[in-house]
Image (tube, rainbow, N blue to C red; front, side, top):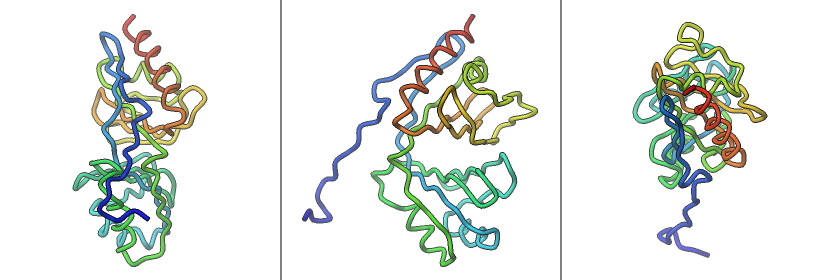
Length: 190
C-alpha cells in the first residue's frame, strides 16, 4: 500500500499537444481542472453554495463564478462545478460539498471530462459547424451555459466572453470534438 506522501501518477491530457484554429478562431486544450457533478434539492442550494464558495445558479442556462470556481446550471437540481488547478490538487470540491452538512450527491468527474477553449471572432461559427445551439449574444449571452451536442457527442457549453467559449466534453470523445472544431474553425475563416 502506498503511503499518502507518495507521488501519484499524473494522467496525461487526452489533448496533450493539440492546438489549432484559423485566422479567426483559436483552439486550445484548457488547463487541468477539478470537476464535480452535483445534485441537490432546492432547499439545500444555499448551504452548498456557502460551502463551495460560489453561488449555485438556479435559473436555466446560467452560471456563476467566484473564488476560482465556476458553477454551471444543468437542470433544476443539477450543476457542474469546475475548480481551477486541476484534479491533482485533491478533492477540494468534494470535501467542500461534504462539509455543507446537507443531503446531496457529488461525484468527482475530473478525469472523465476535459475542456477545449474556443476563442476569436469566428468562435461561435466554429462551434455551430457541429452544434445547433443559437449562439447569438442575445440568445446565449456571456455566462450562459447549456448541455447540448457537438456532432455526435454531448457537451456542456459555457460562453466565457463575447467571443470565447469553454467546451466540456468527455475525454474519450475529446479528439473527435477537437477535430470537428478544427474543421469548423477553417470554415469560419472563409
